[in-house]
Amino acid sequence: DTAVSQTPKYLVTQMGNDKSIKCEQNLGHDTMYWYKQDSKKFLKIMFSYNNKELIINETVPNRFSPKSPDKAHLNLHINSLELGDSAVYFCASSLHGGELFFGEGSRLTVL
Amino acid sequence: AQTVTQSQPEMSVQEAETVTLSCTYDTSESDYYLFWYKQPPSRQMILVIRQEAYKQQNATENRFSVNFQKAAKSFSLKISDSQLGDAAMYFCAYRSLTQGGSEKLVFGKGTKLTVNP
Image (cartoon, rainbow over all chains, first blue to last red):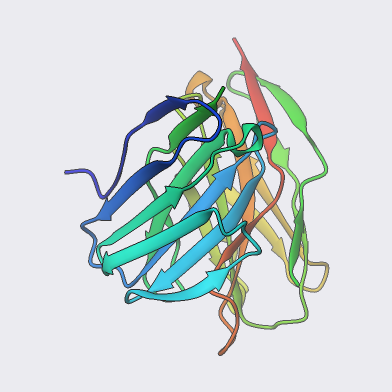
């Protein structure tokens, strides 16, 4: 049983397209996150949701829209993809104050 | 805002030997967690060890131990008896526990560890 699962694991798409990445956790955690890892491996928080409520939005372009239908799911939709959006996107979850449990990452390549 | 600095972009160690990865952080908070995560080529982020700031005792997990110096804001990771499977990127991370503090994990830029046979 995968604790934090995200799909798809790989996306290759053209500039200007729209894409979504889905994330689900079965750990009963109340907080979920999206992190972006760039080509230099730097991990930066994008969004955080607690019980379906947005609590962190780290100056991400509004082409990125997270949606949390329930506290076990956090999806990421990206409009009008740009070359600079190419990265690995990680979903994660945690209990308050605890460590983060990460999904396997979704590698997005924008051509 | 909290920052985490890993000053060694790359390190290498011989199999069976010991290596220490450095991490310093900047915060004005007194209550927080520190973590080391490992990212092997498979890309998966794996928790190696965690340290609560209020605990004076250094955390240990099998061959992995930390040297936590709260006053110096230093949190180094020691890997003993290095194995080929330890080769990975290692990330130091900080998490606030202060009421009203941010729930996010702040990461350092990582140290790439190579283990030589």
